Length: 343
Figure 1 (cartoon, rainbow, N blue to C red):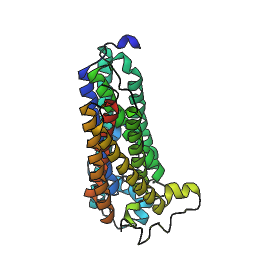
Figure 2 (figure 1 turned 90 degrees about the horizontal axis):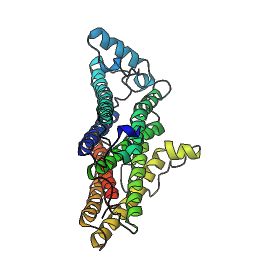
Figure 3 (figure 1 turned 60 degrees about the vertical axis):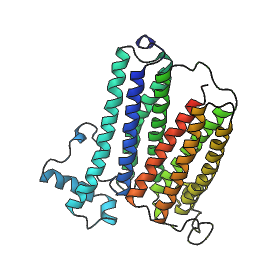
Figure 4 (figure 1 turned 30 degrees about the vertical axis):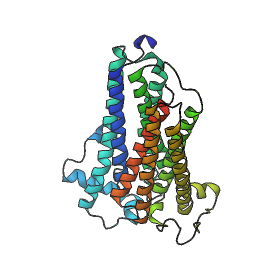
């Protein structure tokens, strides 16, 4: 396979990967709207090829609506929904799936093109393999997630939503890292000291917080305990404990919201400390210290958005902004972690 690869760098490859990363950001935004509008279960079948075509006439729309009327979400949450209201949620889910198809094509077709032209940097073969695996997993996990809400639940399983979002962010981070590697070539010199571990640790903590946020979203936990910094006037949610450890960690509204808040506080403190330390460091080049301060600043904005989203009972606009800034913060943290490896 290495016969199809050459050179140390390719800026054309880097631009392509960054364009795919932008599509992932768009997927995060549209996926957030899809979830917040309750649209994710409106398409009850998985047709990777033929599903690209939406209903084309009244008969098609009635058939699609009838399939939705057969699932628990319609029967228990939306029994009075009209066909016109169904069209609204359908188009959001269709748009999300269309973007997924577009993203897959935007990744796979150029990948084949660059490989045939021998323009893929040889040293990045492992990263391209990881990207290929993540791109393949994401739609499969997406359908696995949707399927959890078609027979016994009125929403998708929170843990499956978490896995789905986690793969999306892993894909986003790997795209950015690989694009930066492809743009600049191999590092000529690496920075000694603890900064690499600090930066990677910060990325890992942000990633954990994103997963905890997905559990909050999957449990509709943003609709309870909206009196920050308290929990219905208390310091600790009264319904924290579930029937089991897993029921508490993954399915208790009080528990998932508490965990998300606590990690947010820790994350802001650590990010500010890293940013200030980077700004004073004699060993860290200015681009890296600027990136560290940028991550701290974005996290402060993100914390404010999170509080506003909570106290306002998770309106669509604020919820989407919160998710978008999570993606932007994560992307900048990945860039910082990549940058500190180089002098």
